[in-house]
Image (cartoon, rainbow, N blue to C red; front, top):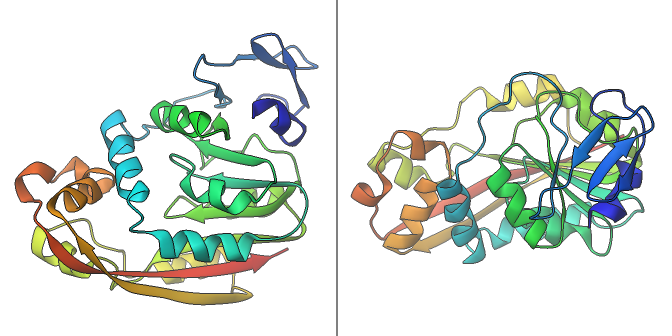
Length: 258
């Protein structure tokens, strides 16, 4: 899928257009980027590379999402991203679960830091591109009919820069009720109460938003994967604390236009 995505990408060094050159991708200025044998390309700009999700975190995310527990989120995101030409870009895409659903025949570009996530996204047939979500994105101005940000970092200026006129930025954030039963009982990472205010400062008021809520019945293995796929994995022993449980899925899906 990288070949189809090249018209939408740009060189992270100079911003020039990219083209295929054998097993590499190059720009007119001569900057060259090798395509990994797994099918992704790393367009990380020069400088310190941020830590991405580990292989274990990515495997846990693939298992949890593959079981359909966040299907309601995927459906809402796909519905809001529907229509329009150009590509669909997901920032912090992980395995590409949401952008794959939302693309609907358009070129799907999965941006992530983790090479383990990029490998899985490439295997899923997506254009998997390594980048830092907090820096300039390797995507050209105004080419995305939809930009997705699901539980991921939000560089507001960059998200709006790559969005096409008439396009939609779809942002999913957890509410304080999201997984609240597990958060309190297992001492997982909590949602910052100031997140809505920070989001409003960065992106303004959405054109529309919806609350997506439902009860989840999770097995012990589901809970283990849920812990292991996110930030709680870095300070909670998922194998030790996981147990079957019911909990609440609760997120806001906000849509911003350009």
